[in-house]
Amino acid sequence: MGFQLDILVRENIKALQPYSSARDEFTSKNVEMIFLDANENPYDNGVNRYPDPQQKNIKSVLSTQKRIREEQILLGNGSDEVLDLLFRAFCEPNKDNIISLPPTYGMYKVLSGTNAIENREVLLTTEFQPDVAKVLTKVDKNTKLLFLCSPNNPTGNLLEKEKIKELLTNFKGLVVIDEAYIDFSGSESWINSLNDYPNLVVTQTLSKAYAMAGIRLGMCYASEDIINILKKIKPPYNINELTQQRALKGIENSKALIAQIASILEERKRLIKKLGEIFFVQKTYDSHANFILAKVDDAELRYNQLIERGIVIRNRTKQPLCSNTLRFTVGTPKENTFLIKALKAI
Ligand SMILES: *Cc1c(COP(=O)(O)O)cnc(C)c1O
Image (cartoon, rainbow, N blue to C red; front, side):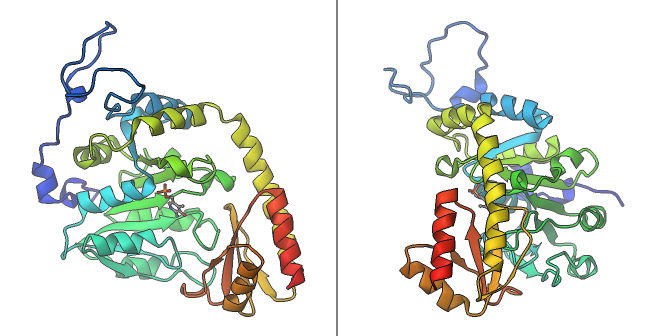
């Protein structure tokens, strides 16, 4: 049997009439209108009006850049909001379940907890790849979402294309591919495969390569049908005016970003090499992201020693398959040089 979106949607969401905001009902016809519909203060200060609930300007630029229709884009207050909307649209509390593949991004577990959804965890292999057969044995009729993070956080590797394809083909729920780090990977985004897989959802973010973590903007790309369901439950003004303005400026001027990303990739190479020369580093993992996972002799000790030298990294030792690992975000050349010096001094 093929993919059926209808049976995945929660009954209450199917029946839901979305909130219709004042600005939704009226579509401008290029004439100067007087807006007396939303109880705003009429005196212009740049932010006295409600923001565009459909964020048309941002979607228009993204649509061109990503070669995808605007109807296939949903924006969230960070991709974390997008992930939460997926839970709330498709997962019935205390009944449905999702599958995640640790070691991975912590929010899938947190969101399943806050939404009262069982999180079925299937460990990645020792190569940090999905164990496809094992994942499929965990699926039942209440399994609504499967989260794949590629490049994966905190391991930094890409998940193999063939494995993802197998999962997309054999799992009849939604496969959510979290591409927060895709711009560091040199690999093609799965958004180019949206037309091949009706159950594919891709999330990206402005928080990492785009250098705008502070404004909170995440993107969701999927079929128009999936996007329309998420639009029903999206808070109408979830992307504020300042964020919309700043995001537009940031994505239109990508020249500076391209140079920054190139530098980060250069520095990633340098850091991997230098980390390999440190006596307590046993192994560094190949990275397709802007961070490096390294196995050390004693993660707790080395973490604290770096703190003493004014450097904060992430201790991932408690994650499955990650005992005694540390995660280093690639900084500026100056910051990385400082880090290398500190590591050598230890
Ligand atoms: C950082 C990160 C995000 C970003 O979330 P935002 O809410 O968009 O800032 C999403 N997924 C993964 C795997 C991340 O590491």
